[in-house]
Image 1 (cartoon, rainbow, N blue to C red):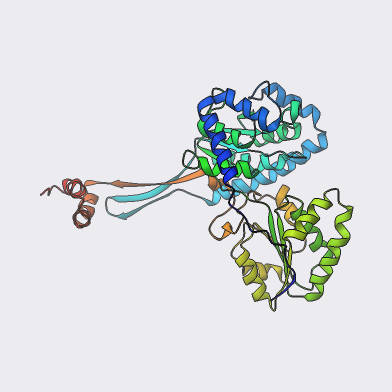
Image 2: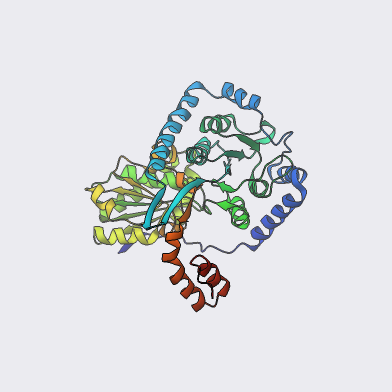
Amino acid sequence: MIVLKEAESRAPKEDLVLEGLVAEILESIRIGGDEALLDCSERFDRVRPLSLRVTREEVESAYDSVPPDVVATIEFAADRIRDFAVRQRGSLGDLEYEISPGVTLGHRLIPVASCGCYVPAGRYPLPSSALMSVIPARVAGVGRIAACSPPRGESGIHPAVLVAMDIAGVDEIYCMGGAQAIAAFAYGTETVKKVDFITGPGNRYVTEAKMQVYGVVGIDMPAGPSEVAILADASANPDWVAADALACCEHDPDSWSVIVTTDRRLGEEVLKRVEKQHPSLPTGEQAYRAWKENGKVILAESLDEAVRIVDELAPEHVQVMTEGAKEAAAKLSNYGSLFVGGHAPVVFGDYASGPNHILPTVGSSRFANGVYVGTFLRTCSFQRVSAEGAKVLAGPCSVLAGLEGLFAHKRSSELRQGIES
């Protein structure tokens, strides 16, 4: 393995100031409710919304502010995300079988009763995040779905985001953001009803807040900056590889792109194309800075070594741009989402191919998966036992209970067999 471009590494540091500030925000909302929530909005978003709850009239008005072709595009993406979620749900099923006479075992897939979907905001609206968090929850059968997004000054939530939330099928929309929004979903306020589960990406304050409220509510995962590993050989188009690397890097200063190639010439060409492409992008300065600080180009001796390198990275996204891409992709194990072939850039998954774009980062794809319809389902087991079945279980369970010193357990078991000692 040879590194053609090394990252200007910045080791992650524990941020105790962030942790303490978020804890302070959470506690203020838990105690102070709506008033504290509005105070935090004024403090961090520099606006105090006239109303936290977005009305139906405001949602309908948003459609008038969004060009029809944009609405149609949101509907196109929603249809594909929904179709994939429906098919995923169909692949998951309840279970019931008789393991021995009178003993029936099984599980039921039961949706959470309520969830809160966080839709981040920034320089540009992010309607895709609304679709990705709300639609699988709706398909899973969640009873009440709330969504929120930070206000854009006095204008409230961006109209395109409101339209996306509506198309996705939310029940409630709140104009709130940051750690304070996570607190409101977790603890509830006079206006915001508490939920059982919180999903959606956000900045480091949102991520820290989700981690701190975990246990009070469920969460999908802590989401870090975007990542892509691009596995490429001599057949890959260097312009496409460079464009895809910059696309990931423009997300965030801490985003990273790593190109793992078996062809030195391709790696060197990609470095040249990055230099050529970034000046023409409106976001080129940010993307290039992240590339310089976090990007890498690695030359592997063989495809098998390249696969091992990518699996060790365990990135959010993996693109496979090789001859025999399908076969090469089958060798990979650790990734949030996989994009197979040169015509499958991450951007398609970001918006409209169908699978979810809320994915594990920071190496957590080794043990975690992205958001999908099953994220909102609980696998709840059951056992149904008749008198005949109890005779089979009572003896062994009594022995094990006695061995573990749990004599009330032993009695409970023996009573079912009528042999209490």
